[in-house]
Image (cartoon, rainbow over the protein chains, first blue to last red):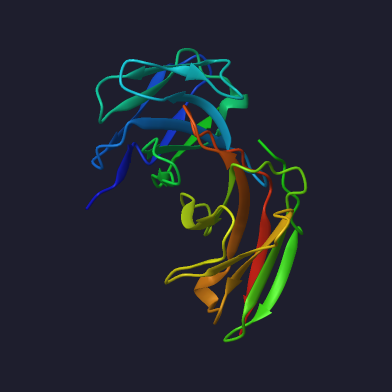
Length: 113
Length: 111
């Protein structure tokens, strides 16, 4: 029972490089989310996908793009990484039925030099 | 979505009940109260949620005041493994179900 799986777990990039963070869920959830968490702070929503084929901006979308590849997978892309994007990135999924909680992955720790 | 206010930190002795308060004075009638926790930078873990009635599950109890302006998460017998940041979140379920995290309460369970 994997739940939400994120890859990679750790990554170091140089400024200007690009990369894609992968997220997959096996719970048949409709909605998926990407958050970032900076030291000492709560999570902030970057982008979300309420259902397959739709994506919308969250609180801090600048510098990121997303793709809802299918119902299981939701990727986050950094086109030109900046040191300000050094953070821990969490993916989550949920159903849209009332009361259903979000389930989170273990995170990707990203450092940009 | 209503904002929440939580203490920055709390201590609790191992084996005792931990009572974590949350104020949400602007909550509307159809907004749920959710509790998550985050242990040492792992992904947040869902604990419990409620709308109007008190709720209990295998992890915790949630007590919501009658006016719904505040709530308390109760861990009945805290262990060292319960040391974590606890987040109280109020959310209106609908098309997106977006969670808005504050800074939470750091609960330190002491041996």
